[in-house]
Length: 333
Ligand SMILES: *Cc1c(COP(=O)(O)O)cnc(C)c1O
Image 1 (cartoon, rainbow, N blue to C red):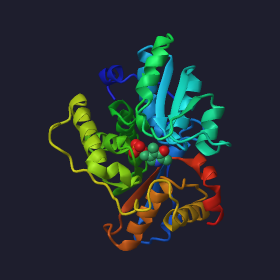
Image 2 (image 1 turned 180 degrees about the horizontal axis):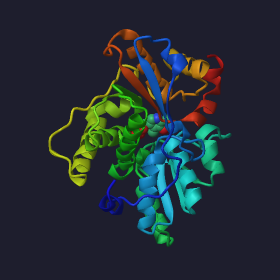
Image 3 (image 1 turned 135 degrees about the vertical axis):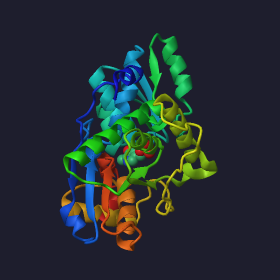
């Protein structure tokens, strides 16, 4: 991106980029009509990696540019976003406050355990699961002389989405280097910033692949909440990136055929996906996000719904520590 963009979007390096891009030869062989590739955002760094690293490079960059000394964010106890925020804060010498829904468990596991090891101050917020308590805590910290900065739930504002505007350009360069075209991009969509960022980035860089976002949390769909949020991000992003027609609503693809069991519920779909990728390619999917999205892709690959000879990309968004939290369900796999 240009110099002026760099000033508008201060950024701090937190991960290893570009993330690897490669073919899945053994898995592809199951679908002779298609070639299947993977983008490895599970390998971004930040205490086992994940897609939030891209958002945090912009969010923490913004916080540091504003002179903040502490970061506040919120999520579920197994939030990958909170764990990567805790790691970013440790790297940059910032205090980290995590507001996590539910009660304090006796033993920490998965992402919660890592957030604790990374030195985050963890506040258990009971039924306030989506950051309702951020503002009161900000006020309290300010009164104590801190300079807190709020990272929204899931890192899901335009600043965070800029990480995926940039990611589109990163993928475009890798496709050029491999002399390849990708027809479809499958990934897990939840708070909407990855999706909005990729949509903006693909427009900015003139890329033509069809996005196939697999919805994870059906509750986000109520009252068009997620759709409205993504529309707002796209409008603001188009204005700031000087793209055309910022006021025109964009077509917002979202596959909701695989979210019926509810957020964080591991079904046969997820275990099928985990088994396939682990045993054909030696790559681990998490049971909440990436396995649900990968299963969605398997469904499309097996159904004849994709165009013939299509090249298909799966964007791996991380989530590995959650696997350890779901040991009971996955032991039965
Ligand atoms: C947060 C997350 C997503 C979804 O990204 P959003 O930008 O919130 O839509 C997908 N996969 C994993 C593993 C995540 O942690």
